Image 1: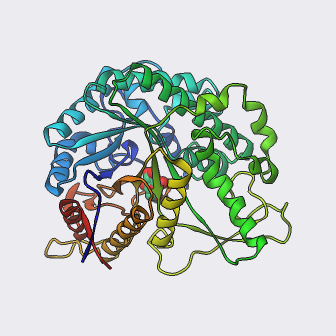
Image 2 (image 1 turned 45 degrees about the horizontal axis):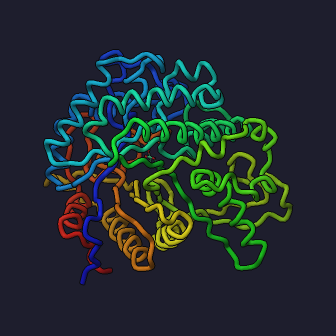
Image 3 (image 1 turned 135 degrees about the vertical axis):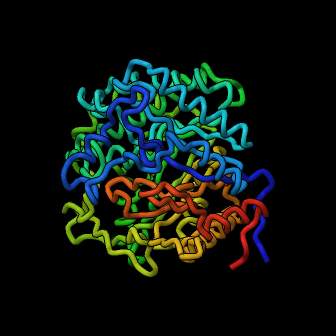
Length: 458
Ligand code: BGC
């Protein structure tokens, strides 16, 4: 027995520039905030940075060949702003030329390219002027987006403005575990607002200069809140977490503005309110053709006795919520494996976003993988994770959610941000000493799912 997906369902895998490219000084690339952050002692496990990562900059042909071998019809990658504009504003033709070659190679291999314009690698020169706390970045990002689109738009139809503004703004400016490493809740909320404005402004500009078939999107990460009890206080704790983690980003994109309960529950909004100007909500609500859904794990929550007390979870301004340890089977990131949450999330999003369809733009898991002496990587845990989560997507489809595709995270083991090279998410194993690629058992399993357009029943 197997669960068959709708005809035309989009299958593929995803990566991000800073996590795979390496070659941080090649062809005029400028430094990004992640180069700077990774050089701070203690910021990244093992004291490493994104160079050489997977050396994809020099090995992209081989990686495109892997996509072809696996039979993946689509590939989501990001362009690096500091490669295209080393100082954040001046175009470096050699940087653009790299993506030109990549797109041509993908098309020659029959792989549909999906471009993400921003996956967290801000040019350092722009951070020096305030980074995402500076409203001027909205215009800068729009210029950059148009520059890439002008070059690739004759061959690329799928354009994602931002990947996970939650991480870029909240983890980077509020929690301090991502670049630029600031811990300022007010700054994080303002940075988040500027991300959303940049999305809206760039989406409008791309729509104006794009072709009729262009599909514009934003990719958001969601962590459904699982309350540890069914009473009103527990439900309220889940709501408080959900508003900041999920609805803060989704609702303005959908044209609903910031959720009103945010203003009741969250501290430090005094910093955010003056940053919101007349016309901002309309700008953010630029029409999109799909919403990208990144899902890895839920978050378990309970209420604190004092609803004004800061949460143990350092999300900017979160109050009254006790975030509990994950339960059951965990991945090597320590994240809970809970496929049911993916079904519920997609059903909820389907209702909230409709008629705008959804694409699962990232889903996957890290485990400790080894290449056996016979050259195989028997990553049973990841294969099981993928199978369960694909069945979860299918269950959401059966309940009416309009999900159009699934992109596995990630094609390759790569630089896992502050975890350095200690966490492997790839369908393909990368030996970081030799740069040897080995397709894992999970990669073969996924290739089979794609070929059959179906996942085996559990
Ligand atoms: C990000 C990826 C990251 C993955 C696993 C997502 O939040 O988009 O860049 O590697 O999660 O942590």
